Length: 101
Ligand SMILES: C[C@H](O)[C@H](O)[C@H]1CNC2=NC(N)=NC(=O)C2=N1
Image 1 (cartoon, rainbow, N blue to C red):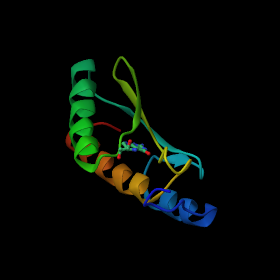
Image 2: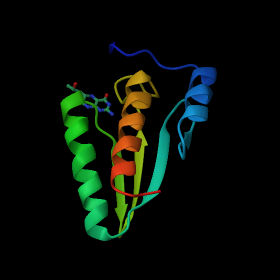
Image 3: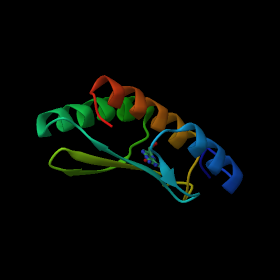
Image 4: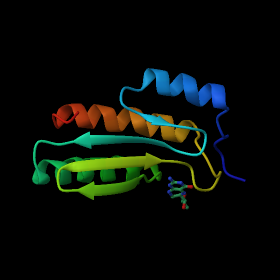
């Protein structure tokens, strides 16, 4: 048993309504961002990596040139928990600083 509880469908829907650009369901939430350039995309990923390591909660990351997709779930629980919605908010803050959309 992990420490974070799975969110209900209503809780995930409520969180997604507050998170700009995120989609998903109780299994996983995801957002795709376009950075201005490949180096900018990598810088964003490095910043997210620092936050993820500090939180001991790690996103699945897909990098294609300057397009980055972050997919969040709590693997130990088999779905979305508050750890994922919290990390999504942090990613949004970093993405804003990196002029992504
Ligand atoms: C031991 C350590 O806390 C676990 O392996 C962590 C690491 N990062 C993780 N990240 C994610 N996304 N889900 C997890 O269940 C998870 N577990």
